[in-house]
Image (cartoon, rainbow, N blue to C red; front, side, top):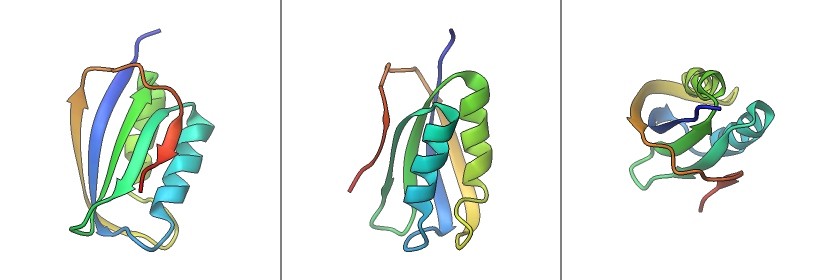
Length: 91
């Protein structure tokens, strides 16, 4: 099975609104591996790795995020898959 990996930066009101937890739960529901974390500048950073369709679903999710989020921009960069396993919230 081909794997796809993307590195995502999400801007807007995305901290303190359960964005990371919702991202983790959604990624696990889609069978996507990776991680998500808050950045000091107010953005959220995430890596998604898995099947191409599942990863694309996560990119689409990032444009909305949690119900309390207000996403302004999503910057996506393609990367080579690294074979990570599981999904975690990084602190």
